[in-house]
Length: 140
Image 1 (cartoon, rainbow, N blue to C red):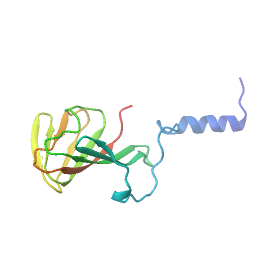
Image 2: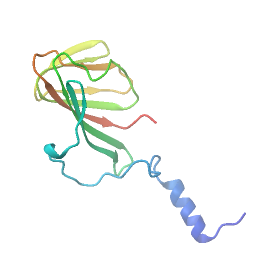
Image 3: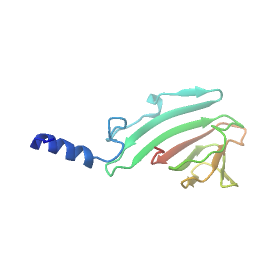
């Protein structure tokens, strides 16, 4: 089987492309996301606003969303995954449990969860809590 120069060029470019850039994930470009324009997904007392997701220039993956938890609520049971996450508390109180250790967090607080560490978030307060999640990488 023989290939033309053009076909070889396309083959080399395809093989050199970072994994995951096969049309499923978009390359992130500069953007502004006013809060009142973010789409809202509701689940009972909780709200979820996706902000951005996609590939970075270096080939890594980034996903950011905002969650508003009602009093006593959890977004989901404790779990673990390959990618790392960072939680940034905007308002209210969160209880972050990482590898069995629980810590209460207020506005301006940050929690970082390493790869495969079991973690969970809960709102122990009497009012809603709002936080941002920044996920580095993804589980593929």
